[in-house]
Amino acid sequence: MELLDNTLAAITRQDQTARHQAQERLDQLIMPHWALGRLMDLALDLAGISGSITPVVKRKLILVMAGDHGVAASGVSRFGQEVTVQMVQSYFAGVAGCNVLARQAGAKVAVVDMGIAGELTGAAADLVIKRKVARGTADFTRGPAMTRDQAIQALEAGIEVTQAFADEVDLFGTAEMGIGNTTSSSAIVAALCGLSAAAATGRGSGLNDEQLERKIAIVEQGLAVNQPVAADPLDVLAKVGGFEIAGIAGQILGAAALRKPIVVDGFISTAGALVAAKLAPACTDFMIASHRSMERGHLAALAELGKEPLLDLNFRLGEGTGAAMAMNLVEGAVAILTEMATFAEAAVSQATR
Image (cartoon, rainbow, N blue to C red):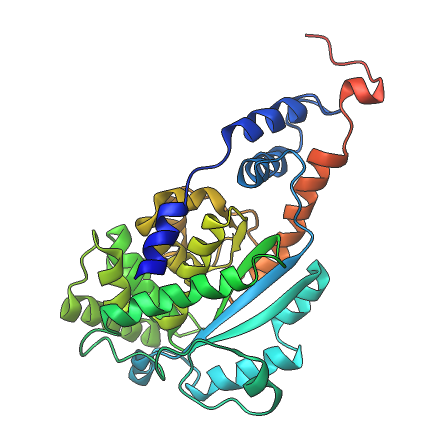
């Protein structure tokens, strides 16, 4: 608990002096005022995050937090739990969607075993970052998914991994893998945003109408059985969360304490971001919402965080794909701030008022 407490205490808001300096420069760039819109908003945030009008975002890392969910046994996904291991193996083979898009963005990918139930083999067994809390969570339709101590352990594991990469990374990205994790995310979002299970629960792996109704009922059951306390994010995380979602929350808290930007992927990552924000509201200053997921509860979760996503591409994969795509825009925002000329520098006449 000491690491978590120290991390929470270290998180403060963006640097307002750097934001003001960036605003002055952006106001004078050779274009109609704020003509690049949200790219310029992003540049302003990056200056505030880094405390500099020349932020650096070249070294990028997407951390894939992986863990299994006991609730998967209730049939909430079209895929079996063995797919978690198989997909983690594919990350190490470099053939998953996140790998492909991360390469395009010039980002590295690392995988953290937060609570995989199965056994990794070959290179994956050696290269995975080992932070396993347990072999999957318990089925939250029967009781808490994890103990409060396990929730803290998983949060601190996410912080530790982020701190371990502090000297090598300028820009972090979130990602996850774990069959059943949209179900846990739906329960977290419902609890923390005050939504019904139906409003927070989507089709996940591509469920049909009948399967979706069953998933909603399972989320309702989990919330009814556990009665998570919205004012206590650790209680919500422990009762209906997942180890990888806790790892993502810890990663976000760790990045904020390090004053480094972190690109938040889709619905599951945003559930982790909600937990982090409820523990340390100032950490939202360091989050960059990558994209708008097709999952039903994502818009409400983003609204609770006060975030507008950069992209809307009808993504519903998760696994870091949205974070990888958005990293290109982060670099673009820095380039506008640091490389584009002002009217004075380019000797260009300004518009008449």
